[in-house]
Image (tube, rainbow over all chains, first blue to last red):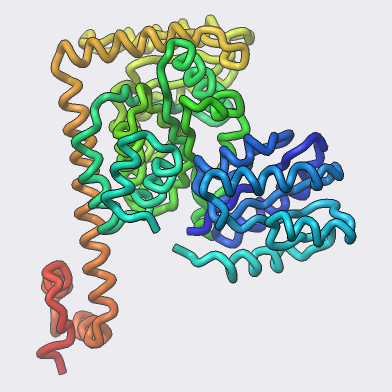
Length: 129
Length: 321
């Protein structure tokens, strides 16, 4: 069973995208832990730890990804979850993608991504156990 | 993957990452889970296991969040299991209880895990029983397990708890109707949440009247506590009533019975797991299709084939032409 944490760190209140992703992953047979809005990096990492997820999918539309994402990646590492598949969606300018990948994100999914591509991406990288 | 004996020792030491890994292992089931549970079981019995159930929307998650914090306020720790349904169609689930447990879950003395029902017969109660075992063995003072109060497996989960709390909210008239079917009997404590809303007094009165309908006065009369969980009102009173209930269980020897029941659920489910494995093996047997054809043709009886499956002997198609 693939377990995914869908989290919305930061201050923007737009969770439609996160909910669409959560729904799509559930419909693909995954267990999706949804945290709700306004999560701190510490809350995201702690939820990932307690829920023992293989995937953390972040949705950030506020532009705060350059600070939030490295912090979350660092905390995951610190908690012994450096092997978690870290995905980022939302509004991420093209010129930021490389630095997000450097920070530990496996892939950035921009607006208009087909949810089936996300499902396939996760299924290919996380063995079903 | 972390080895069994090491993982067990780390759980007993209360390491959070190990507790989390162990919950995944026991939820999956199988030999690794059995070995781990065997390591952990002798170290259980400390936690006060409380089941929390009630209709959707009565405020269970907020209440559990508040109870965990109230326990922390008294210097105690709390582990939480929140059960949500899996989709019967895809097997997937959206587990949203954390949304209303934001305050407690960041406390280092609180650990919260979402558990999907995953649909298998009895599988949920096995996973829940095993999860309670992990949290209990890791040393939490309270273990709170929350389910939506509907269905047989939820009632089974509640039967694993030492104290069962049924939560209602005023203005949901169907609530009291709903709890008539089975839940009323297993409640050790009633909570009327959202008690600042109109109709709370009526709900309490109605409940009290229903409890008085019992033919014989029960040895334990479930108290009714009113709360406003969102404002953290009434939560210490719940903890006090739960402690009083535990004392009652201990004084009357009922605590041991509940524990026996919990262990029985683990054993029962281990049996189902073993049967499922035998059946899966039989279906892989090259003679399986032939054996089924023979049953269909009436040259072999279904019970005999079932016996053979349970013996795990193989050779399903032997002697059939």
